[in-house]
Amino acid sequence: MAIVIDGYPNEIQALLFDMDGVLWKEETPIGDLAAFFSALRARHLLYGFITNNGSKSILTYQKKLMDFGVPCDLKFILNSGEATAFLLEQRFPDGGPVYIVGESGLIDTLAAHGFMHSDDPNTLVLAVVVGLDRAFNYEKIRRAADYIRSGIPFYGTNGDKTLPYPNGEVPGAGCMLAAIEAASGVTPLIAGKPEPLLFEMMLSRMGVAAQNALVIGDRLETDILGGIHAGCPTLLVLSGISTLPSIDQMDIHPSLVLQDIHELLGYLHGK
Ligand SMILES: [Mg+2]
Image (cartoon, rainbow, N blue to C red):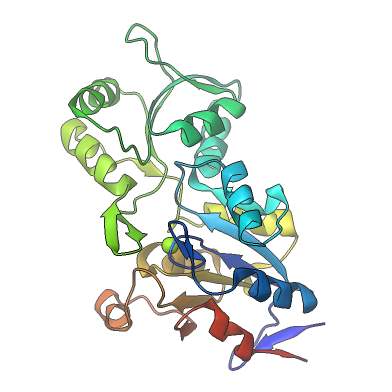
């Protein structure tokens, strides 16, 4: 079955979802996720999940999705840690030691691609990789900045300054990156949204063209801008970070704006 969205010229064959603020806030799901994704499967739509949060592995996300009744093949789940690993592999195809400021999900993801975290100050690392780290401290800023000032490349998983929580926002990876950028004087290379890389990786795995995939997110400057950069139509949901007035303030314009993903079903029509 082909699907069209009112007012959008191309058929939608795939939906690329952000997760935090779109599907859930922490452990609280936004509506009946099992029923929603069951409706997508009934319409033969492909779906995938793309998050800037690299602190948890894609296996962790697959389990969380399953716990909410949403089955998904692991190859259709991507986080910014996977995108960072892709960038590292392009530059250092043989792998090697890296200095990681991040949590176990990022450390495990990079290790699976041949980039082991080294905490030994005498090891010559290939790169510094920085993501969300809830045990961030002065010593980590100092170590990372020392490496970066000596000319070692500086990668950031994602630039999100905050993450949505059930009752507000908490600091995100962008805060760690800002501190290390200030200490080193070097701007990081960012792997996650709004760079188009994560979307391009997913579209290639799905075999779907950009104009036939709807990017769905709650944050204009990452999800929506990233979708625009990738050449996809975009849907902003107001269940997370961005608000209606911020569209004009930021001058980032999604193709569609809805309260939450559940409203989307009313906008999909079989052709
Ligand atoms: Mg989000």
